[in-house]
Each structure stands twice: as C-alpha cells, then as structure tokens.
Image (cartoon, rainbow, N blue to C red; front, side, top):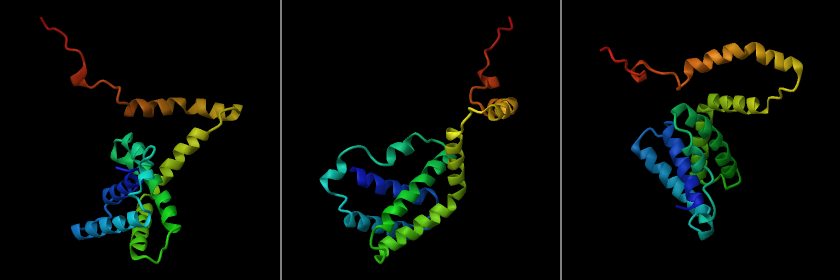
Length: 164
C-alpha cells in the first residue's frame, strides 16, 4: 500500500470509526468518493510508495478508544487542509469535506485534551512560584496516578501463601 493510499485509508477508518457511516449505502458512497479523490491526486503514482506512511504509524501506538480519539482528532484537520486546496465544486470533495467537518465537531473535546497535553509538555517549571504550586499539588497528583495505575496489584495476582 502506498503512503498516500495509507493516508486515504486512515481517512476512511477515521470516518467509519466515529460513526459517520449510518448504512452500507453510505459506506459505499464514502469509498467511492475516496476512490475519486485518489484519482484526483494520482495516488497510484510510484513516488507515493517512497518513505513512511503519513498517519498510519502514529495511530498504531494508540490502543485505547479514548486515546485513539485524541490522535485521530489531530488527523482530521490536515485532511481538511488538503481538501481546501482542491476543487471544492466537485461533489466527492464537497461530501468528504462535509463529513470531515462533522467528525471534527464530534471530536472537539478530544482536540481540547490534546491541547492540554501540548500545554503540559510546554510548561516551564523554572520560576519559584510555579515550582511551589507544583509541589503543593504533588500529593493529589500521586493519588490520582496510584488510583489509575496499571501497576497496582490485583488480588488475583498476589502471591499465594501456603496454609500447611
């Protein structure tokens, strides 16, 4: 599968995954529109196979449904940008654009979650005031981490003691 075909595949999966497909007829129309888009972009060209996929590899690392929603919420926007640069008078492009806009609206909370992650990664802890705030929140943060940790032992995993 070529890189551009991967991108279009991710687009299909994203739209299907989030319920933009009400029926088999709609799925057929969506696939038909994507096939027309592939033709518009000459996605069967040999240079498309060069290099790594654009989006597929990024989605593979996200396993939980809510996690996938966060990463997929970031993938919708670049597709919309690509479609904006095409002939929007074509019905298949207009339909795909409308469906992606619907998806983006559906994923708005996930987009906000992603922005929270970006803000955390850019947080500067160099000032004394922010460090004090962080330290005062440390116990609460640890409580939440321990409460949701997958490292907590379950009863069934605790070592069995011999009752001889």
